[in-house]
Image 1 (cartoon, protein in one colour):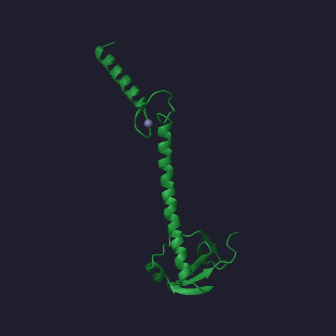
Image 2 (image 1 turned 60 degrees about the vertical axis):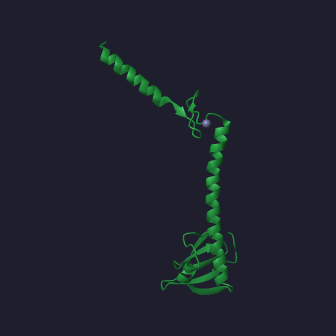
Image 3 (image 1 turned 30 degrees about the vertical axis):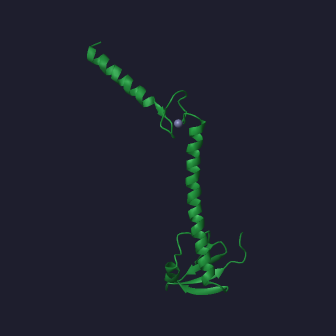
Length: 138
Ligand SMILES: [Zn+2]
């Protein structure tokens, strides 16, 4: 075999062995041993998974806070069973219309959005009717 081909062959081998190296997902240390290992030890595995869980917990906390605030505003503006309010009024107070817990569509095609037991239906004129749900969970 010509020398250049031998050299090429050893380069390919070198590249392949580099690609086969695996690194710990947590500390980036090279992992020796089984090819399916993702962490160098239990400590790194635990740290990694705890971080993942913390992110999920933080996200859930933020969503819960939004829902709580939304419900508080619905309660504030709907002390009776049914009230009308302009949508912009709720927006000014910081209501987040992207979040709700459940949705109810009427036979006529209207949609009620609820934060827990309190909700609203939007009208085309920019007004909302605020309502209270009596049977909380189905
Ligand atoms: Zn590690």
